[in-house]
Length: 424
Ligand code: ASP
Ligand code: MG
Image 1 (tube, rainbow, N blue to C red):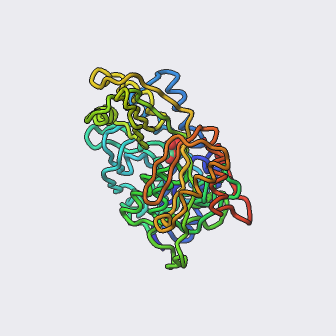
Image 2: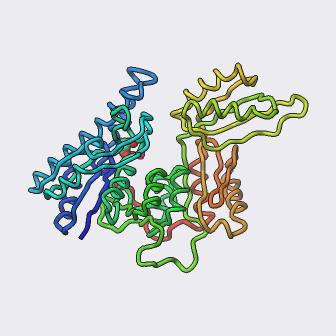
Image 3: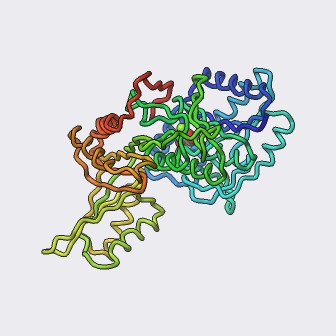
């Protein structure tokens, strides 16, 4: 009997009924003899609603106040959950990220955890409490301001606490039964995996799979914390994400493909008419980096011999689009490019699998599937274990379905269940 960290996502605690259901599950874990630390997200779409509200009062809200606002969502659910547990006759105490010792840097809206000092959580556990921690937030080391870890950051809070408290497992409860070969909201025939290696999960996460965030998986891999992703709505075992499959049951041969992910949260910026000479790309991306924007794919076209000008396109989170356009416009005095184009009607489809390294023909099958579905490809990028393409946003669903089928990933048994959430 050890210490268990459980994380419940927004759709699991979307209303009072959900909170009571989750409270019963937590109490059952405690009754089984475990010490339980629970990390909770904001109820339902609360975070999105708070963001909408902020944008109505200020088009570009100040980072510090934005974080202060958003952390309120998790504080509501943590307090309600603690109350629900108490009314079942068990002791529980809720803690903000700051009280739980989640120390971050001071980059508002996407702070990084730099230390976890969970002294108060240990004390609460030793006194027989269930500890409830507000996910997705911390306090900055230097300024002592409240920070948030970026969208979906509660998973990272959970893994970070699991590492700091030396928990045997971090259970991530969500609205689907585990990690699927594609988003079950898009592919009904997606298959649940029993196990996936950290490496493949990292690629899926960085290419848009929303079930676990990249940063959370990265953290778990660094501290070797096995993650068990499962549904809070069913009692079914979910997917283990770890270095080795549980009980060492590594499949005879590694699957060639782990899954197909997609991402519609990015936009594409094209810098048109860039002089084709050394240093231009560097200046463009330095301007983007100085604005603290992370970019994804980059493509530079061959320059037209007649003009000596080239176009450079890159993708980035839509949420950073405005800031990036501003930064580039300012840089136009240094780089004499013609114009900027902004396109937020794009989507990205990625095929991920460690077996890709040693299997020829994967790329061909991928492009054939897209072609059969009548999907036009705008950008391509690859890693050792991933191929990604950018398409029109409307093509994303048919493309994901076509690729999933083409690689024989469709399940022949049940349809995947989505228990809740709006997928927003
Ligand atoms: N409530 C935050 C969000 O919706 C954090 C989380 O859910 O993990 O992004
Ligand atoms: Mg959420």
